[in-house]
Length: 321
Image 1 (cartoon, rainbow, N blue to C red):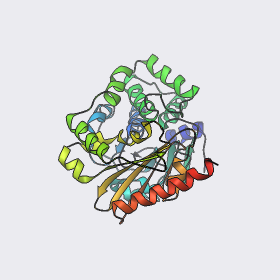
Image 2: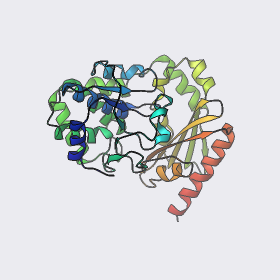
Image 3: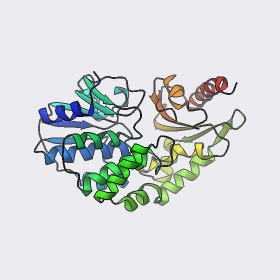
Image 4: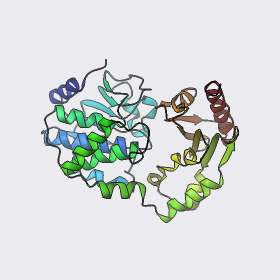
């Protein structure tokens, strides 16, 4: 059942022993939103902890400073920025079918939780968590503001994407007024890369291929590239946006190999077509109009690419008439 911001705050007041779930291949929004809410719940005297997919990526390590490690038996499960149970990491598999509350902003949310607070017009889950914290009448300190700003800036590409609204900018302004370190966060997210990250990006760019009159661009990141570069898994975020930045490309597709014949696909589409979620839905995924994702299993890379390109062509064709 869909519930309001105020009702979401009431559920958090009424319950205790919170486990906050984040999605696989965690980004700044799921991590920032979860750690912000966790800190607030702990400040309210409740038990809360964040469950992630393994170790937090290095560039997001500062977020973990927001919370205190706690040990307890979880009683109330909250999914943060997770549109579907298929996006649960292996560490959260046991909680499928057991989620009490989902806070999310994806239009493709499958309403798998008992209750959910989903606002499709929010640019980031952090916008919604910010409103929930306000409804809790809890104090937002600099640490919480840093967590929320991380979610905002990463899910909007440093406020460059078409999902940015007046509400997004107002939220960012309030977080800056509170004292978040916007300069540090944006520099860390968008202007700092290790030599290993540069190496894997170079190899990925060499895989770039164009289709359909150069309107579709596909880039691959294989396990071999990751091994040769020595890049940390957490540094791969951001690669998905590269194909779409190329002039003339309407649909950018990045295929990242996770295991043998298991591929995570990220799709970015131009605002003139806004078809990313439609394309990903064909393969059991979802997301937003301009950004989506899906998973392929037990298929070779060349077939994955072939199917994705065909689907992209089918989605683009009616919009070009």
